[in-house]
Image (cartoon, rainbow, N blue to C red; front, side, top):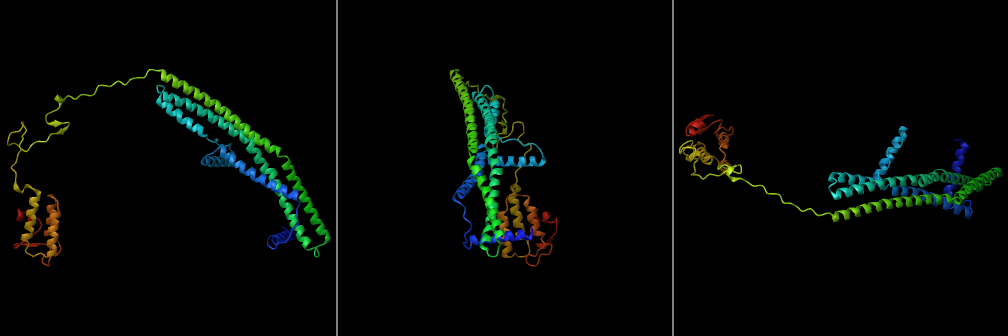
Length: 384
């Protein structure tokens, strides 16, 4: 930008600040121009909002719309054709109905009805696709063209006129420091821009019959869609009513009870009860065994609990060193908390007799048991 252009932009900014903040009055525009400017602004906002709402009406799923927009953008970047169109909800419902109808089979009345309804939904989806194409071509695209060309051109003329008005007002305020030729030239440029903008707005507002025609195209497309949809649904209703009549005249099938499974108890072994061995009383013997075969006399010390008790009492009575109260308490707690498990006895004995810890300073690797040093492996013979 040249120095003269930069100075002009600075003067425009100064004039605008003085009008907004300082309350300076600029050049007033006539009421007709102001009224047309308001209508054009309303038209611009209406076109943008109606295009957005119409797209939402035709394609109500926002996630699918976003996915389609991304796919179409990628296709344009790659120079490819447009991606797949919007998936209608009627098509999704129809596909589900037909799939489950085929799974139920032709013998099921509900399955046949689902197949008919699914075919109807597929036809409705095709009609909806036709509505989308018709509305896009005859309504959305013309509005998009109006927004991108005519309305943008009017906004450009209005912006240019506002800049020249600020330049004229700045020079008019400095009339003593600016030559008359510069002031006259600024006024001519302002009037020229004002006329161009006014003519553009007038032509747009006077040709609004085109927007009415575009709106009529939307309504006609909807009428066609609903008419075809009504025909398809009417045919489906007739099919379902006929199917209901046919089913009502058919004789109702009766359920035939099947014989129950019987169980032959004679084939079951006497020693088994449903695959589980029967319990035997303590005095009962198997007839295949002799009275004394495979039997051993019971021992009083066969119980793990009794063996562990004897081991515990032996340890307490044979240790030469008097135990402190805390150690005795721990041993008693261990004894009463320990379950009746014979495998714990060697571990407890090893912990008690072969410990490296000094209970009261007298045990260092071996304990004195009634005058005899019990080493590893010797405790068994000493106890038993």
